[in-house]
Image 1 (cartoon, chains in turn green, yellow):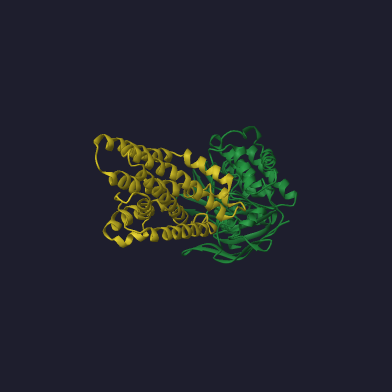
Image 2 (image 1 turned 135 degrees about the vertical axis):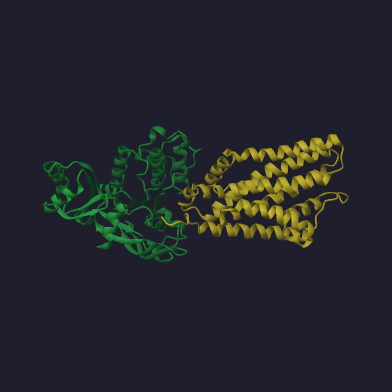
Length: 303
Length: 237
C-alpha cells in the first residue's frame, strides 16, 4: 500500500502559475484527476512522477520526495501522455526492455504477463511503428505495469482508445485498485472519471476546485441552473409564454437570441417542445449555452 | 554501462536517416584521398587535417553525440529510460560509450584509410592522424552529449563551437587552442608522427592530455546532473 501526498504544492513558470497551493492525499484505489485542458493536471502528474520539482510545497510517495529520486520507480509506474515510443522495437522487446531496466528476476515472463494483461499478445511480435493509437497506449501501460508497481500514474490514458479498449482499460485499472494499488489517472472527460473512480480531484485553473466522493460533486454539478439559447419563429411570443411556465427560472431577449434559464435541465427540455407547439411557434435552434466542461468547472469553483 | 540501453541506442542511432549523412562524410574523405593520389599533390594537411580532423570529425561527433540521448529527450522516448530506477550515471555512461564507438568507427577508421590511400608510403602519418582523430572523437562526443542534455539547441551551439571557436578564432588566437578539441587531436597526432611530418598543432601534449581528461570528466558530470534533474516540458498543462 502506497500513499501519494501533495502538501501546499505550487508550480509556476515565470509569471504563469500552473498549480496553485494544492494539498491532497491519494491512497489505494482509483482516483480521477479531472479538469479542463490547461488546468494544471499534467503539471501535477509530472510532479508526482518525479519529472518536475514543485516551486513550493512537497510531493512525496510514502514520505519520500519524488524529485531526483530514481529509486522511487521501483514502486511507481508511469504512463506518459505523449505517444512517442521506440517504433523500431516490437511490443515484446519494448516491454521486456522495461522489465530489464527494472532489474526484474525473469524479465521475459514479466513482459509476457504485462502484455497479456493489456491483451496485446497477438501483436507482441510486431513493431510498435505499426501499432494503432490504442495499441500504443496499451503497450505503454504494459511497460509501466511490468514491475507490478504499487503506484500507477496515467496521463490521459483513454485518449485514442475505442469504446471497447476503454472499457477494458477501465476494468484493468479497477482490478489493480481492488488489489490494493494506488491508481491515479488524469482526464478532461467527465464520464470517464464518473465510470471509473469513486474519488475525484477536480482541478480548475491550477487550484483544487473539489475533492472527494464523485456522487457528491456530480450532484453539485447537476443542481446548477442551466441556460439555453433559443431561436424560434417568434422569440418574443415564446419569451412571454415561457415566462409563465413552471420550469423556467428566467428569460431574456438578447439581440437576435432568446436566453432562457431553466430551473431543471430534464423537465425543461421535455416541456419546451410541447409549449412551443401549443402556441404555434416553430423552434429553430435550442442550444444548452453552458454545457461545456469549462462552465461546469467554473460553476464548481464559484461555489 | 547498461546492455539494454546500449542495444536500444545502437538501433535508434543507426536506424535514423542521419546514418546516411554519417556514411556520406567518410565516403567523401575517401574519394578525396583517391583524388589526391591521382593528382600527386603534397597537400597532406588539407586532406587529413582540414577535411579529416577539422570537418569530418566534429560533424560526425556532433550528429552522433547529440543523437544518442538528445534525440530521445526531444521526441519523448527517453521517459521510458528515465521512469526506471536505472542510475542516471549508467544511462549517461552507456550513451557516451555507444556514441564514442560509433564516432570512432565513422571518423578514425576512414581517416586511417584515407591516409593509406593518399600517402601509401607514410603509414605512420596515417596511424598518427587516426589515433588523434579517435581521441578527439571521444572528447567531442562527451561535450556534445552533455550539450544535448543541457539545451535543446545542442546542434546549433555545437556548430558554433566548431565553426566559430575552433574554425575561426583558434586560427587567429593561438591561446584558444587550449580549449580546442581539434588542437588536442592534432597534438596527439603530432606526438605519434615522425618529427619531419608537419602537423599544425599549437598545443603541447603536456597540456592537451590533462585538458582533454578534464573536459571528459566535467562534461560527463554535467550530463549526469542535468539528466537527474530532467523535466518534462516547460509549458503549463
